[in-house]
Image (cartoon, rainbow, N blue to C red; front, side, top):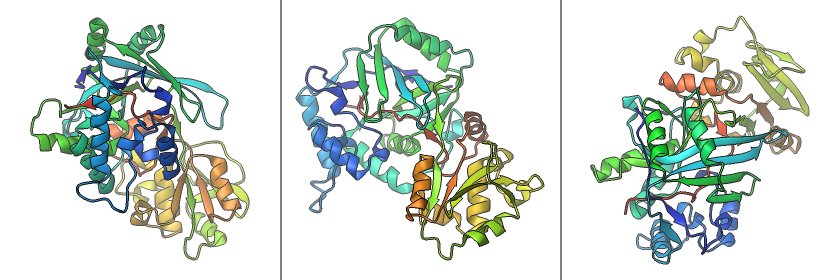
Length: 414
C-alpha cells in the first residue's frame, strides 16, 4: 500500500555552514520572535525560504515567494545546498526530555519520499481538517520554488519492530548530522545508500497504512500541486518522516485551552450548568472524560457522570470520537455551558492553545485569561482508531513532541 522511495536530497554543505544555525522548527511553529532569531542566526538559515519576512513594499515582482526562490537559486549555485550523489533514505533519531518530566526518550524513524495518495485510496489517513489560508500560502511557495523543505510526520504500525531493528543497526555508526536545537532536543541523522537495507524497508512498508500525525496542510498542498503538474515526474512524491506507533519514543503532549474575553463569564453559573453532565472533584486521576478547570485561583476537576448519554448529546460523532476528552470539552463545556460554538473555536475568538499546565494556570492567575481547561493527552490508540475509521478530531487535539526540523532534507523537483 505505502510506496517509499530513496531520493537525492539537497543538504547543507557541512564545510560551508554550521547546520545548527541554519535549520528551524516547522514553519507553522515559528513565531515572529523566532523568525527574527533565525534570521539573525545565519544568512543561509532556511527560515528565509520557508517563512520569509514580508515587507510593506511587496509586489507581484518582489515578494516573500520570489525572494524564497531567489535564495534557493543562489544557495544552490553557490554550493551552500548540495545534492547528494546517490539516492538515499535517512535514519532520523531525536533524543529529548519529556516537558515537565524527567524522563528521557529517543524517537526513532526514517525519512524518504512517500507516494502521494488521495484519501479515498485508504492508504493515507488524516486525523484533522485543514484550513484554506495555510494551504494557499504553502502552494504559492511550492509553485515558486518547486521544492519541499520539510517532511510530513507519518505514523505506521509495525508491532514486531522489524524496521526499527534496521534503524538501530544503522545508528551504531557516527551520524552524518548531529545537532541540538533550541529546546535541547538532540537530532541525529544517518544517510543510508545501502540498497539491501533500502529494499528491506520498502518491502516492509508495502502493506502499511499511513496516518498523518503532523503536516495535514502541507500534504494537501502537495496533492493540489501534483494535480496542477498533471503527471510531471516527481510531483507525485513528498518527503515524509515515518515513525512506528509501537516505538516507545513516540510522545503526544496535551494541549490545554485558555479562555479570555468570554462575554458574561461567571464561574458559579458555569459550574452550575456543568453539573448536568459532570461531577466536580478537588483531585483526580488522569482518567478519560475528566477535564481540569482552573478558575478563581482554584483547580478542580470535572468528571463525566456515568449516566450521561454521549450518543444523544453528540449524535453526529462516532463512538470513538465521543470518548475523546477534547470533544467532551468542546461539545459539553464550551458549547453547551459557555455558548461557544464551533465556528468561534475555529476562529480562536476566545481560545488560546497552551502546551504547559503551569503556563495555562499562570495566564489565569495573572488575569490574562478567565479560565483554563486542562486536558489529558490524546492516546496513540485513540488517534489510530479515529483516523482509520475515517473520522477526524478537533484542531489542536494532538501535539507530537518534539517537532521535525526543517532543512535537514530538501526535495527539489529541478
